[in-house]
Image 1: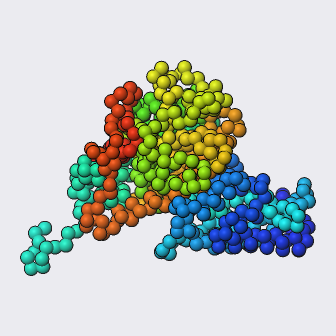
Image 2 (image 1 turned 45 degrees about the horizontal axis):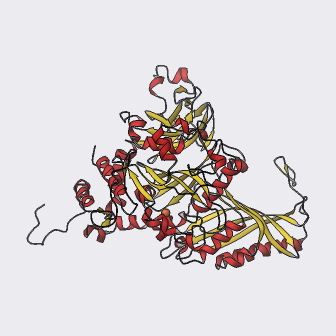
Length: 183
Length: 455
Ligand code: FES
Ligand SMILES: [Fe+2]
């Protein structure tokens, strides 16, 4: 196996500049900060109006690739800008009981990999791994959500926006009572 | 035990479960239900044996395993089974524990196979569950009676409109009799055309801190909580008149002494945009309503299901909802199974269904609306997942037990509210005049009580 292949899959050369990579990482960190500090409207401004936000369902299949675990077109969430806006507005309402008291979250975003998207020079494929700690109310219980995110970041007018996100969870059964949070 | 005079009355130990259960029926008669039924390991053990291993339990949909060899792992109570279509096309529900030493013979949650091979000593079973071989068979098992050593199979498997139920009780009445009058309504919900409905994608699963009965009674009949708990639906503008989901008189309960029940709405969606069946014309034109009996057709063209429960742990929902404010409502249908995991935890399983005859776009729109409103991320359902945690907490509270704390199930009892049995209802079941009551919940718990107290 050469350094450039994994199995029979060729990796794209890491041909974005360090500057672009730094911008993408900064974007992900800023986003995580907004979400952790519950600045959801500010977070929403980081999304493109045609954003696609998907959390596909994972199940355990026989030995095979991870992709096969996600093969059957089921989703925990399948959102667009309008549904995400509705979720955000709900979080500012008085009656979003699932987030009352609000989750205390800390998101760790790591293993960031940025590649050019050859089809559209203004867009980058950005993969990252995440861990999201979620606790609520009194007590010491918490949920830990983890996985990989496959994002497309789009550069418009010198500004990056999230154009799409696919969250590949490690979980088959969600270990948390609801997805009242954004990953 | 006689209290000893010297030490004062002995502190009363926790009341034995049999004595406790004898107190439940009188409590129900007064519109109460002791908190303890929501968190007690002894009662839970009785439920596994006398509810889940006695009745018909939903395990999946035929469209999930259309071909011979297709399988999926499923649960009845807390036991794991392989739901499989064998080589001859017969549906089997097989305990996923090897007959030799109990190892799980199937580790994938979905797939297709002709055989299950146990990893421990490599005993092999056909996809029908029959014992089919073992290593060194000629030397090791010269006189083994293969017929006795297949996988343990659920003795009864039956389907209705593609919904697969299994029972671990060989003497259970057949599924139609078990469903009773509910079957009549299932025809009207799922049997609108011959092609029927199909599961979209994999079911979602998520863990919620709740007793399974809280979910079952909520889906069956709790219209009263909708404008309270789900008020954010109105706040964000997706459900403009949330109060109308409560007691405005357009809705009613429909329930059976066997423990099944539903919330029905009369004329939920207005013509002309919507067909009388509650679906847009493009879908309604694919229905073959002449398959139904004339009175079922009357029902279909005047009433819509909102939510319901088939005893013990299958929920069904068919509601119109907008995926976001300003969007047209779309009707979605889903099935929900509450898998018990101890008395205070459930795994929710959620299958969204589409009509095989509907356009891909309609089914996709319905799927997206369903995910936005219900399911793990649904803005409505998120809130249910946090309020049900309280019943198991009270259920194990020492203080609540000392006080014999009863939860209140008096809604709709004599003199409380406008809520009566509608004597003009001409279709199966008890129908009420409004939803401002809890008759279905009380019937559900009476049925439950009968099960857990019957060996
Ligand atoms: S436990 Fe399965 S073969 Fe021994
Ligand atoms: Fe609810």
